Length: 371
Ligand code: SF4
Image (cartoon, rainbow, N blue to C red):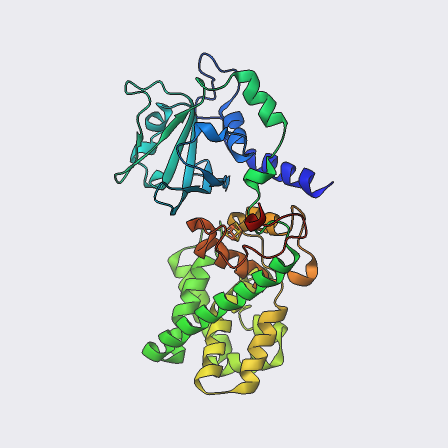
């Protein structure tokens, strides 16, 4: 499959998680479900003339509860980038009917896209929870049902949907660089904790957080988590941080094994070692100018395998890889961390055009700056 076809498929598969609305029924005058309207948006096919501001980035399909589209970006009249969510409905009144008007998850909506505006004050903005409002765009008066279906069938408008980082070979190594930066920030925070609570105290706090965060969908009681933290401590002996440093020098298998107490599998053990132990041991190396330990930590980070994929970075990962899987030589935990770092610092704030991945030469075509 070509890169373009794969990207189109990515959009379509992303759309599968977008429901067709609570009632699923089309209003009079439309014969398509809500997901078709969401597709029109995500494929970059909503006419620019219908929008209140120039579109910079269509965003990605929302997965799970919350707005239909995340991280869209517009050029505000002030010249600043306005980034946020897009909520899609067949009828504008569904925003209230579906409970969004009082749900804080919808406070960052920057555009309410609907087929028809059936509210008493049709054409007005949509009031948001926590104050503020978003412009309402109703398409029924601007285009026909047949036109909507024809545009969706065309697939993505790549000029409208591809971010500047799409398909860049150089960008992949830069993502790992962002991952190193994220790890350095976490090491610095671990050092701050150790400064305040001592290295043992910091390890306990980091471990408690990592155990809670790594439970996933497993129901786990507070008592069970306390027991896991205690068991890991006990397995490391009287000086747990010193024991972790020795294991870091011995290599990844030994380092992860330090977390593998009864009930902690390989994947969770690796997650605990990455999130709690590695930043702390790196901070220990920095605090005591221990060069061999610092080198061991760097080697661990460079070779750490990729964790389970994060749903919220899937769209960015696919864009950077040009719609394909990133080659195995550039993936790994640092790559995954780099994607998270970019997502948090740039993508979610409308950073297209100014982020570290913008403006790198593009193997798949022109960069944003060239367009
Ligand atoms: S902000 Fe940067 S990394 Fe994120 S989508 Fe835009 S160009 Fe890509």
